[in-house]
Image (cartoon, rainbow, N blue to C red; front, side, top):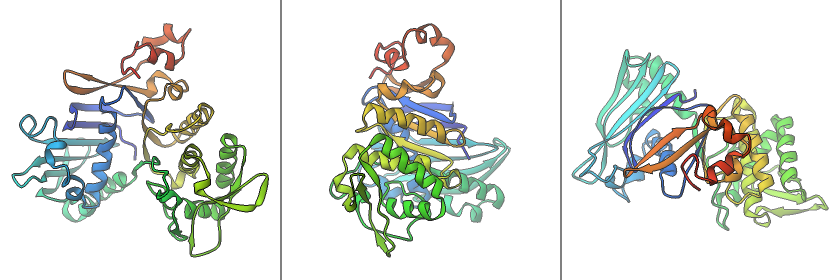
Length: 357
């Protein structure tokens, strides 16, 4: 289930964002340090809460680093998500023991007509057991399933110890994991069960990396990412022989070209353009649009090149005003005259829409 509206209050640099509408494509643009990543990190926090790891997520930095200018200014964080007829909200407060406490947590149906409290004054969320705590198991289960279908992906780590390059179990292939640690197992599943999609992934990678011949996916209990060069199909190479940009693009192609039935309902990616050649960014934009035909995409970006391929309505400008992060979705009618002569990227570079790169 796609997120229709989001409210974030008192979280990091975001003082108050109320009932902000999200569409199928949502590309956050803005200068360094304005708060794009803070918006993205909300989904990371929800994921930690979902798996009862809130204290693990917050203990090192302490609650004040999550509150807008700390507890002297802000006494609580409110996160609220509306999707279809359902919703979820959670309020968090700091404690004297330097922990972040869940003050209250609700699932709901039809706006606020049917509110189910699933927990109060807890160190960890009851979201995963919401059907047990809510008086309506149906509302709780639907809400839980929706939230579990939001996935935050990050493919930035392409170093020598990157999980993308590591060995994984061949049966670790139910979903494509957030850091692509099971990419070889997942690609093998696609090759075995969804051959057309697998071949599309390979051909798209070849468009960006013409030397790429294909993957080598071995029949064994443990596998890792291997590939071969078109000029030498008999010699296998490990992932460390690929450039960082090529490796990240392989992950993005796998994520965005997998079958819709396996794809999360909401996909969140922080700076997917990192390390990509301008032609690869062109291909990436097409993959994003393809996925957004049936799913929801939320991206933060600093790429002038990437936004050239999208309409104003796809773009959310992020700025800092009066010491807080503000968000504004563009409207095409406001930019029609400029778009006759300039690209979206040129308009952004000229600081005509704010969020200057």
